[in-house]
Image (cartoon, rainbow, N blue to C red; front, top):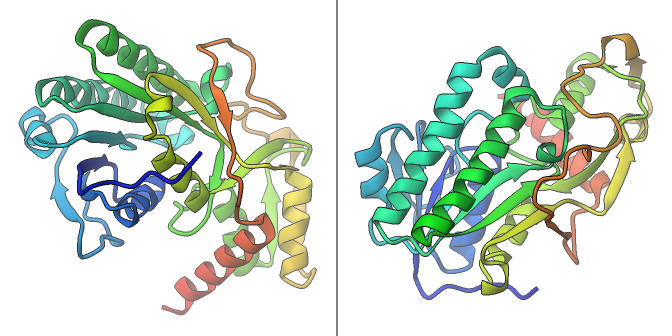
Length: 299
């Protein structure tokens, strides 16, 4: 894939104040797009050349106004924490499914060229609770809008993201925070769980490259090339921190809503797998997170 450059085209990044959305907004700005961030909270990472709109996904007029004149809509908004989604199915349905339908409807009405929807590898799985169900539902809704109204799309199924700006419930961020603050990590599992980690900035750059017309009406799986067991990952954190971190594995307390070695159980529409040619090595990414947590403690 080649880097995609814009001629000052307007794009709207829904959920652009969040972890992945803010990095995609930055990658789009670097590629020459006129970026509007739409989120329910202000972005602490907004760049001077980015516009910020504070709004709710359920506010159809606000979403419609934000999308006027936009070439592309990038959708990263909604509930992304599996634990929160499990506890709040109604809120998950409102935000993830109804909110997504609002974006799809307004994209049709404002003649958006293509919508990019952030899904997850959990759609292949029987894990992930209402979070997974909401992503599967929106994938099908997006297909239906294309078939009925001609709204083109690219579905982006992300693997295990990590890096700066991540939420406290993000797996790797949580382990690093425990290590820095408590000098120990309590892991709910056996340590044999496997994940395909991808640095958030690598994922953001791949997302921009997906604008290429080749990926119109396609499903993409965006993961890293670094596949680690949880045991390997945690020992790497400990080693980077001088080997002084105590690691406790608690297999009897493993969360059944997360897959162990692979998400692949169900067979939704097959996606092309995309990995970066150049990527952030995970050891460097962990060091970056450690430094971020230390800095936040000092503030």
